[in-house]
Structure formats: C-alpha cells, structure tokens
Image (cartoon, rainbow, N blue to C red):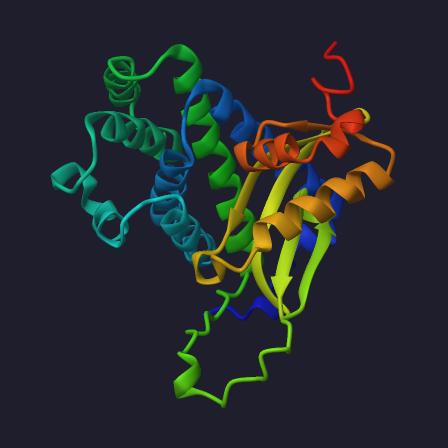
Length: 271
C-alpha cells in the first residue's frame, strides 16, 4: 500500500482551496436542513458514496457520524447490499439509488430511472440536495484517497475499573474549544481527545451555524454547552453577527438572551 508520505496532501498544500470545499459542504448541509432532509439520510449517503469510491478515511469518519445521527450498526453493516434487503425505507432507497447514479455516472437510461424513482418520494429541492450531498462527499473521497490520508486509529475507551485507579473527585477534565478554519468549524476536546464540533458557513459579516455534533462516547459531559458558548463568544469577539440554522445552537441561543444583540432575527433584523 502507498504510504501517505509518498503523496502530496492536497488539503494541506492548498488550504484555502480545502476551506472553500468545506464551506461548500456546510452550505449543502444548511440547504438539507432547509429542505427537510435530516442528518441520518445525509450520513447514509456519505457512507454509501464512500463505500463505492473505497475511501477508508471517509468511511472511518462517517461511520462514527452515522451512529451519532441515529443509524443502527445493522443499517451501516448491510448498506453495501441495500438493494437486496435491510431496514431502509422506500424514501431511503430512492435517495441511495440517486446518490449511486451521481457517483458512478451510469448510462443515461439508468440515471433517468433513478430520477423517476426519486421523484416519487422527494421534491425537486430535495433531489437537488441529495445530488449535492453525493457530489461533495465524492470530492472529499478523492481528496483523501489521492492524499493517502491515514485512517485514524480509534482507541476503545475502557471502564475505569479496568484501567488506572480513579482520580480524586476534585480532578476536572480539560474542556477546550478551538476554531478550525480549514474545515469551517469549532472543535471541542476533552482531555486532548476530539469530542465533537460545530460547523458554520461565513457569508459577509455573518457566521451561520449549520450543524453541531458530540461524539456518543463523550455524551453526558456537558460538552455541547461548552462548545456552543465558546463558539458563540468567539464569533462575537471577532465582530461578526450570528445566524443559527443548527437546532442545537438555536436552542442554546434561545436560552441565553444575553447574546440577542448579536443574533440575526433577534437583536439584528433580518434583511
């Protein structure tokens, strides 16, 4: 197998281009939310396209994201054979068929058939979003495959009794939030381990939060609130306004009116 050092990491070589690609993906997720397409279907498409393209890095990343979005382990395992069975709805299958056509570009009559099936379950706007989801994850697949990005090794978290003795109750884990400009998101870390992120799109002087996700392994530790607070305050400190298409960030803002003066639709009128 080709070692990653033998390849040019094109995302690092041209970070501005990669940031633009990440911004496109965030716009697509915002469009999906507006069109009523949930995160579960987005991740179903991300996984299937990554399977077809054979991208190990994207499969590793999106398997975890898919579990967090509500897909079952069985749905993920059976996905390569979705046409033959599995707990997928008719709408899921219509979206998957269209996503496969986007990825493989089959004969025109086959693509027309997938469009015809998709129209039975999805609107024109939703079909457009499904196509864009498949296009963007396909682009990320190619970036990772051609750069030979290594698959991140996932450390299984053991029970406390199986590892070292428990720390004193007064020892607080470190919670840290960092702005990740390359991927248009804020990352949250617990004791140095990546635990989640909040994605955004920047338009003019506005920062639009479009999706927030906390890894299931870190659930119940209050990281969502820490992430939301520090991300919002960083945006304000940079003199930018805030829009929240992400339900989690929107809910956090609703509970914290002290930020209203910086939020579009609250202290700032919509144009």
